[in-house]
Amino acid sequence: QVQLVESGGGLVQAGGSLRLSCAASGRTFSRYILGWFRQAPGKERESVAAISRTGDSKYYADSVKGRFTISRDNAKNTVYLQMNSLKPEDTDVYYCAAKQTVGWVVPQGNEYDYWGQGTQVTVSS
Image (cartoon, rainbow, N blue to C red; front, top):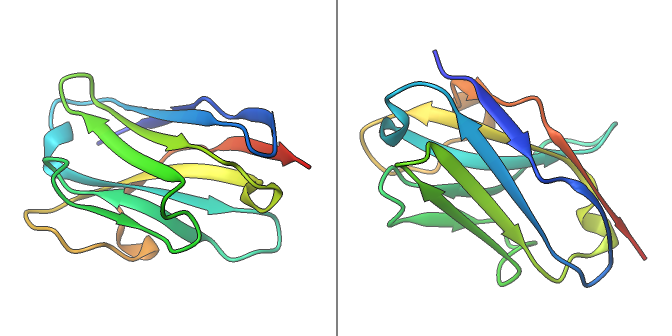
C-alpha cells in the first residue's frame, strides 16, 4: 500500500509559479512511475506529466511543455511539479498517482495503482 499526499496548491496570478509536492508513504517509492493529473468539475481528467522510476525519463502534455517540470527525490519519497508561467486555464485540482512497474511506458490514467486526494490550483487573470 502506498499513500500519496499532495501539497503546494493555492491561488496565484497569471504568469506566476507554484511548486506542488506529493509525499508517499512506504519503502518502495523507487519502484513506482509517478504522474501528475488535473481535473476540474465536469471535465475529463488530463495527464499532465509523468516520470520514470529513476527520473531519467519524463513525459509532458503538450499544454504544459516548456512551463512545467516534474522531478522526484527517491530519498525523500517525494515527487514535485514545478509550474511556471501559469495561465488561468491551468486552474484545476491536481492529483499525483503512482504505478508499480519495471519499465518505462507512460501509463494511462486508469493504469495507476494509487492516487492522492488532490490539491487545488487557481490561477487568476
